[in-house]
Image (cartoon, rainbow, N blue to C red):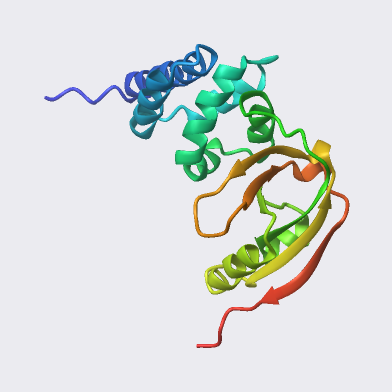
Length: 199
């Protein structure tokens, strides 16, 4: 008779691997080791660990500027994935304040194409833009993918709410993406709605 698989041992091994990957991510950021960070994030695709690493990074008091530059390079490549795998928006905000170069400019008027449901509940996403047309195009292009459609939102964002400013690739000269802490937004308004098309 074949012995039943030891699922508890498998679960424990998977958790050990995830913890090890998370530790590798944190160590690579703190050590400003770009190659090690890229490798650890690649391993996280197999074993997980991004969510745990984000939580750990958010608990650090600070990192050096070289560490921030190393993380920024990976964020520009994999920011969407890291946001998705972080699992907790507020934990991600805490981590990004530690590991990205800080914003040092003035308050700004920014736009975002947002899910209508998120807009109703004030659970705005992280990425905002300085160009209304880009946010508008995003909202229009995704209007049939979300229940209730999309909405273009506008906010007057104070400098303390802006985590970082990132240069975006593309044809719009001088456009920046701003990562924003929604907890510090108090002047957000919906300016245009994009309903799903009738089929």
